[in-house]
Amino acid sequence: EVELVESGGGSVQTGGSLTLSCTASGFTFDAFDMGWYRRFPGDKCELVSTISSDGYTDYANSVRGRFTMTQDNAKNTVYLQLNSLKPEDTAVYYCAADTHIGATGSWPCSAVSGFGYWGQGTQVTVSS
Image (spheres, one colour):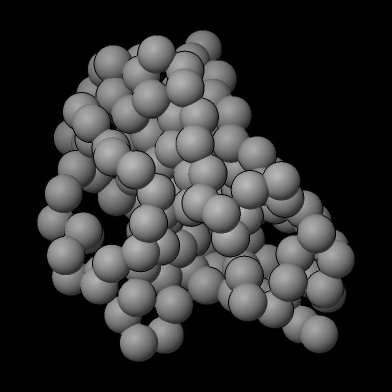
């Protein structure tokens, strides 16, 4: 059974930092692309960062330079370091895995949530 378990969300003030973790099981971790989505009220989902199976990382313009995604294959875990947080970063953050995850972008959540494997999500709240 595939499982993705996120942790590390919380509440911080503007300018603060958080580290999200996602531990995977039930599939060949290093053969999959991994990504972090975030879900905003109104059913908008944004793919903010990805790591391909060959280690290439990509970021949405909205987070580039502030967020860093890393992967530890020995622990079947991906991380998302969130720095210089802004109130507009407030969302539920989801870890996702798929044989191929494309470019970063925004879509209705209903258009993307059925693809690949998703975790249960972790809330990030940034106050001004």
